[in-house]
Image (spheres, rainbow, N blue to C red):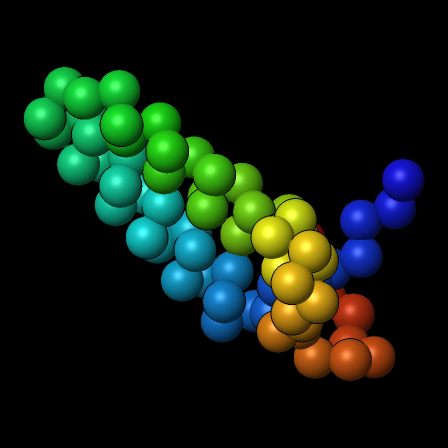
Length: 68
């Protein structure tokens, strides 16, 4: 299965920052809920979101390749 990128550059940066913040808050409060932050970090890192695919949303610019 090939995962077509559907998360744009700015969207992926926001996901990584917000996800890292959630992980940090979870570590600070010693909560397992911080693991939820790994989901946006991963989807931002690979530029693919399965929920976006399900909803037919695409924030990536068409015909633009970027190195990961």
